[in-house]
Amino acid sequence: MSAPTASDVKVLRERTGAGMMDCKAALSEAGGDLDKAVEILRVKGQASAAKRSGKATSEGVVASYIHATGKVGAMVEVQCETDFVARNDEFREFAREIALHVAGAPTPPAVVTTEEISDADRDAERSVHARKAREDGKPDDVIDKIVSGQLTKWEKEIALLEQEHINSDRHEGKTIEELRAEVASRTGENIRIARFARFVVGEE
Image (tube, rainbow, N blue to C red):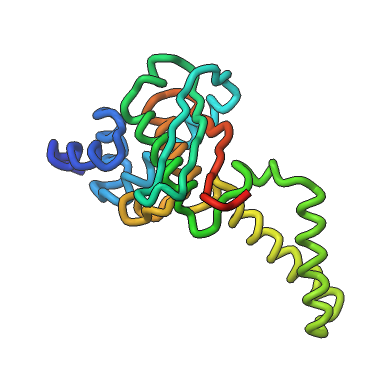
């Protein structure tokens, strides 16, 4: 098998932000298939980021986005491990993209992760779907499956990390978690979205 061409390595680096040697290795493993090489790098990057997930995140930035109308805005705190990364342009742009998403998401996120959803909120949502299923005349064994499926769907709809970025064309349909993992991989640090707030004029 021939070695990856310099042009393919360049294209892969532009698409993923990975290092040259990593790109060469991924292309070799993928047999020259660029799309497969991208997937290989994503998997490795997410694995690397997972290893660092326990690292302390005492640095970071607060980013904001205000819609052109001036009636909708958002602020988000994104944390990292070092001041060096906190000043990195890519890290800051990521934070701003998250603020933009929070401001404009069709379903405004309520929590960062599904783990943050309270038991009370889960129970309330479960009750709504169970009652509806009973009103539709569904048997008990089917109701359990319906409620479980609807609950999982709801959790993903309101958790920021599970949402697909609003700018799907620019970010290739990736979720916020996928974008976070990519930035973590490229910076070599644990990147964490700590909290966010969304403001709409006239809403409490």
